[in-house]
Image 1: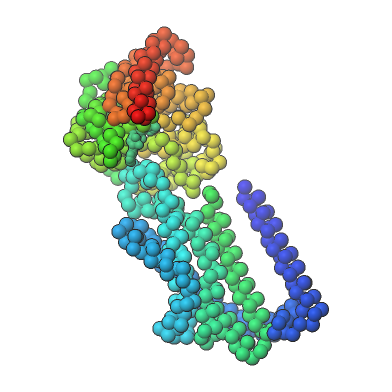
Image 2 (image 1 turned 135 degrees about the horizontal axis):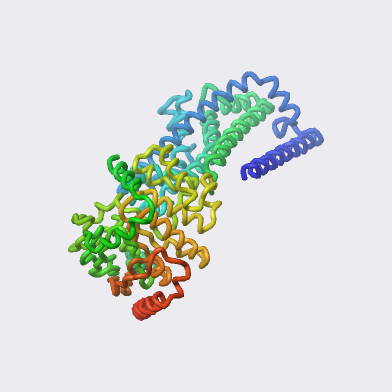
Length: 253
Length: 290
Ligand SMILES: Nc1ncnc2c1ncn2[C@@H]1O[C@H](COP(=O)(O)OP(=O)(O)OP(=O)(O)O)[C@@H](O)[C@H]1O
Ligand SMILES: [Mg+2]
């Protein structure tokens, strides 16, 4: 069973690589063949050269952005899950909190970023807060949905074994919710990197968003693309890591 | 903790099948393990049970039949402590008056569906109740491993529920119920979803296991043959609101062989019971029709 899963994912992986190479080749041909200016589309080879020559500063920026995203992500996940568990344990809170959270979650979070920058300054803190907000609402709602999937009959069964509310939560409700929680976590990985970068563009001392913003001001479009590629790599790696965890621990679906 | 200890001592004490007959001989003199008087249960406007009277002696295997929707599962939910009956009832466990909720954790209950947890393998599903009682996992697993062959699950301990057949899933659920060692065991149509052949195998197997472990069992079924083949007594319930319509003692000798179902005694019991059930089923259809 696990053998077929890994050969499946290997095939998917090699297909992804092949696709990326194809896109790069077409891109290179277009950029060179049509002799496009760099602000429209620089060639892949020039972007790779830019990546190599700016490697030091890009890596530092990548670390900066990754640190913001991961920290905010971790805080957001914890906050979202904790809130969801509390709300399901206190049924009266639920009818107020859930519609409110749904409403807040439907506004694009970046709309709050000017306020957050004002409150938390333009250092890392504001980015972490933004990411945490964005992630926590998604995780909150998916955890609530997951906890709700529990079957009343299963709750009755383990109560008949003498389980109290916390045992029901720990042995039944949380594992039942896990598939939806992890699916929410997987989607949130990409979101957390995007939110960090967008917030950096609005004001920061470092990070990929800041690099992109500065490069645009300096009309250095090769650098813009190089930063975009690094950002995509972070997103993909993050997404891949959580997908791996998901496949490993949610094997029963 | 003390509860666990006491139960395991009890379990260690029951060796072999020979004591069973003596338990049954003296059963009439013993006080009932559990006794219900005037138990009613209303859900909104639906009266599920009305003035139900049941009493079960230690060591008995009592089967319950009745039309669908007559309140059999409701009766079990009350006995498992999950539902409180309407006020005015009398419920005694070993002679002590109790509220239904006092029974939580004191009765081993197997619901109509197996409700195995998909993220736990066979062994960990089987030990769920033991873990909730606080037994260390390693110890519980060891107990369960020793029981696997008896439940026809040897070698399957590491499989997950979605890899098992219906009959095996049911045996895992039964094993979970057996490992939760309580005086009273409630089985709600444990073989209802199985094909006829598997079901007869499981019935014979259950009788073996029951005689070996000497538990008091209340067993719901839709199948009259099953009710007679397994039971010391068969309780026939009326259409909703459920009461006991008929209490039929089954005096077929044990151990019961498969061919007992063709004996004259069996057939005459079956005739009596089918008539009673038929009458009630007609009623419940008429009620449903209007
Ligand atoms: N929690 C509940 N809320 C409302 N009505 C209920 C509830 N539980 C049971 N009932 C009703 O009580 C009646 C008896 O239900 P119960 O499940 O006990 O029947 P049953 O004899 O087990 O039926 P079956 O043989 O089909 O399993 C039914 O009419 C059912 O709709
Ligand atoms: Mg039922």
